[in-house]
Length: 376
Image (cartoon, rainbow, N blue to C red; front, side):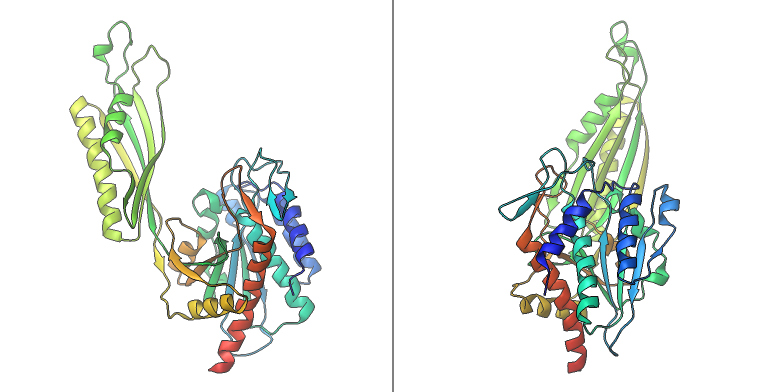
């Protein structure tokens, strides 16, 4: 049923269109053009304006042609990470890659291509289906920003599937909460060669604090990281201030709270010892979610996967996605993959067979939702 040649051609066309976060205008226009050709109306929300970007989230709805079927949402994000401009895809031995100078953009244009191909097949084959909502989000790669501005009136589905995973045999039903932390350490400037003892070296204070922090994998459900540190103006000046940015994630709310508290405690102690000042801001990035094994979304996904020859592996992830945000709005979502591999690197790639299998999986989710409803 999947037109492999058309699907891959679509994917190649998509990755050639630059769409860094908040610069998705051209890609959004291309999607809207193709939706119009399919006779589908597309609503663009105001997320782009609120974020200072070029495009908003795109919402499409297909009215059911059969009754009493769960309303399903399919989602993929249309932005990519850097280096993601001027992508030149190539196919060798069934594997799609970039030319090695950029990412490929399979994260998440493989998901977008699969959803668009599925819409085409629904129209061509006149498949039976319940209400289907499609939501293409912007600015996902910069903190799930686009989905946070989605109008809740677009989230009427009973269950959802976010096509932002990796392996096609993995069904992600659990993801952690994340808190971000931004710290400023203020010391005292002084001439580094004439009277360094009169200064308070903010970089040294920060270094001592970070060295004493528990970072990396804290336990099986908690991680922490310091990702950015910046400060100083010249080698002959004792640095007066330093900014540190980091995060902590956990599937356990108490553990997340404790990890953030630990990081702040270490910073305060180092500042006190050296006479530096500390300002700290903690922000909630997103909250954890878990879809139970017996939830309708899971039952449909498992059956759909097995129906196309996939032996599904249900697992948790350590990353966040738009599924976290949708769940906070009351919509339970699973994360499924269409084959994107080595994402966020110049070695990113995707196997043609995996993308085709991912598309078959999505089609079968729609079929299985109808079948399950008829069995009731």
